[in-house]
Length: 220
Image (cartoon, rainbow, N blue to C red; front, side):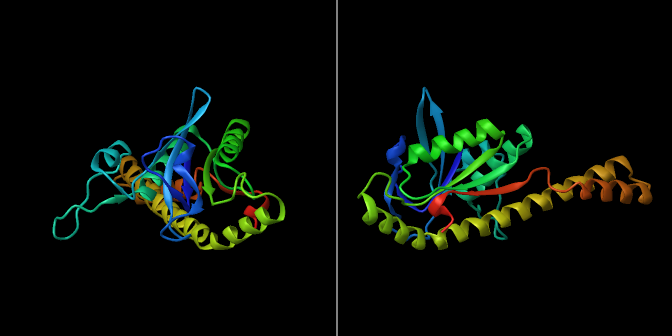
């Protein structure tokens, strides 16, 4: 499953130690992307660089692109994750859940719960994880510390909503373009049938729903 976080990350680590308990050293609004897979009962993590190399972009089906001067235009990790999510949603006929965990949750607990959502409800989960203590100072002190981190993470989560909306709009434009191509293939010389097919296909709406699950302090 894919992860977006405002935690400090350690790119060289491939287990749950890749995620720190502190906010990013660039500030709590800085977001990083990662992918987690359970291998032999343990979580393995790949933290994506902010700028995706050409090989990873090609693997995700992102075609090379250039600006007006012919210079290569890079892809970013959020674009890689968006493409990966949309491919899975379409191929697996699933809906999307954005999951925001609560107070005192370590990464293993968060990913285990997200995996349970996927297995139980046949959905694809995108995890937003913020720097909850996850076993740090006990009691009231830990709660207040996490509440401060939750407040600081509001901007980061807002950025997630904004990017999600942007990529959904981009996906919808692509979907409409495909419908237009298909309408032209079927009815190249019949405007009435072209318009009828286009209207019917477009009205079917997005092939998946987008859902939000907030646990405990994640609501805050």
